[in-house]
Length: 526
Image (cartoon, rainbow, N blue to C red; front, side, top):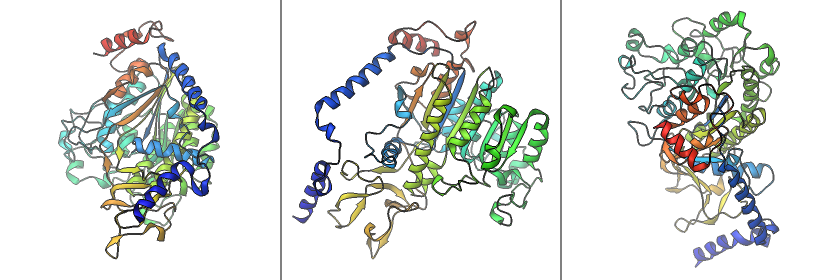
């Protein structure tokens, strides 16, 4: 009876809330509120019957690493709650995009993928093996001799080859899995510098990823993120953390890649920065090339960021666009909210979701700085995580709060957020930890997990793809993840599909009806 009573109380809380106070706005009781909202949504949908078939002068690609659909939903609620709302009715910036589809994320050799193989798919247009970047599935992880002849190029390269300015912004290190697929060809995502490579690979001529960042595509106009230590000779003291051994340079070849970059860009208005003050003091009109490395490895979580020394993701994106948009031929910008993934791996949902909200701010800013008439913006994830939330929580329940009931098995409370596996699995006196005895709203609290693992794992479900701007309607339905860069390239007249662009600039063809447009595009792509 006790358990039944608790369930009844929990269910009634959905309607009446704590102390009998409604947990939803009074206007929501009126059917007119919902009908008016739905009609407004319908009118917006009807405007999409005429597609935007302009050529995409600019391409902006936002990648939320590990940002599966549950993360998107939770970030939406958190965003609203941070603004004093209940959260569920809030819109993320990506929610406002007119076209949403699903991408299948598996790697060629993995049902549940990693960030390297997926990055090769959504940047290079080819599915690949887990752990490899910028090479086809014919390459084998860690086997250097399978690299040559199996390299595949990225949409960043395609854009650069046609004269567009290109840039990379990430909250991870700039030679991490996601950004590295844009420029590198490596059979091992962990070959950050030559220090992490086996002797045999070096002997066989394979290059570390940091070196490839500067060698493979020398004209990347903007590179912003972390990863400083991989650019400097071994044991070189870090400029920001002098004397801290783990932050020292790692390179065994003695090369100072940063200084080499500076020397090569001296006559080309190139600037190297390593802190927020230096970055924000730049006049973008006087900058043609920018290299910003703000941490020895990954950048810190936004909740822990030193706001005086480290720039935020929106701040980096703003500077990047101001530099890139000067090119009359347009630009391609890859932006990664990379630490969403890290927060989930560590079971730290609060860190992960705040990273997702921060990326939402960057998406909003990019939208203000560009136009849907000539800029195709795509937001997606590489993969999901074993993260979810539930427990019949009431409207407006704190995102990091408790479910409104006790377990009917062990009679203990539980948080709404939970992981399928990970470091949050804890036993106390032979039973599940009582979360009421700990601070479950603390920034680094590790949410409870069903299966004990040192690091939580990725999830295997499809990820959402949000698109707006020219030819955004090409990203519809359910498709393989490697389709994404092909659609983007088609919209921008780069890569393989250029026949439809000859002699045209602003528009690819007259605006067609939705059915005719889809049929035409399908034929062209087949």
